[in-house]
Length: 238
Image (cartoon, rainbow, N blue to C red):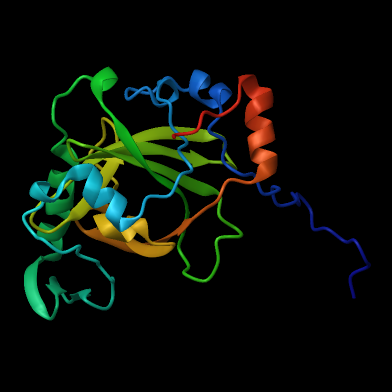
């Protein structure tokens, strides 16, 4: 029997949980293309389905009703074919290519002229059970041009990068990936992002796709205090 407190050779304790931060200090360290720190927004703010529809305008959509994707249920893979509502829609390779095309279809607009509606902050996990052990966090917002963009933080490695993409009007698929890179591409339904929890697909390549989960988060009070100490109080959208 091992004695109490025994640790094997080269043992390293697990990193303590770190909440993502979007204070001025974070934005100053990461001057992204879309200039997130220059906008008077609370990036933690939730967006309802009604708010998203009102923001984009009903004329923006080719489909009148919101579309929701439930991966493994109304959209699923069977062999080399992707099915939606039990109807084949594409091969698995074609479906990944479509997501990449959606993400790559960002219109050429001036970053300082864009208005953003925050969609919130999400914990990314490979399990649908809990977000308590999450170390990867996704901040997303949507513009009136249909651009969907934000940042990804890995709070264990302190790595961050910017993501961007768009929404397909016909299918309401929202897809985004690291700015300047072809893969990976993450996708879900636009209106899935208005729910507390939803599933998503990550296409690591044309031939490798995994199902992940997004858990919407509320900002913790201690994180607000940390942001303030970094160099200013987070500004809140009226």
